Image (cartoon, rainbow, N blue to C red; front, side, top):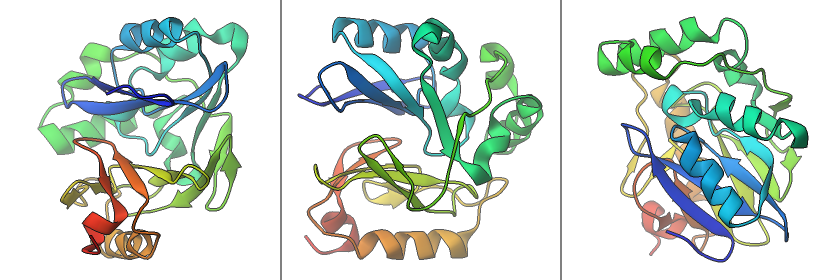
Length: 216
């Protein structure tokens, strides 16, 4: 899907949504670059956009595997790599062990990590609930992981929810760091938001707060 300001790329073996969000004439945020860095870079080049921010809804490997290549390709522009503080362990030194444990729990083997692994750069922005980065306000929504977050552009009425909220579903809570009670609380928080807000999830199709909350 490609629109005026939002481009959707479905990447990797788990078909993760990577979003390119243009927030001014030349600059964009890349949200959840989970794989296929070459395609992401090619799309940015076609649109003549610079990734000012590489922002991650959470740390799972299928959402961040392309971060090293993307950061390297745009090293001269020094894009800010941002993740919630509680998922910071998925980036930087020592993150291979964290990813291996997580993928092994999800898929029974760490083969996906081993086949794609490149050393992860550290985050240079650790996010908290209520922080602002570019056009986005950060919503901390634990449950899928401790540091799961959504990125809300209030003015545009769009919300990138990662693996917290999907169309007709929500993210797993049985993986390391998952918590069903926290997920329930995070969903309740989302469902109190304006029902017209458009939801751009980490997997699957677009939806709205109203549809997922039962409000139409």
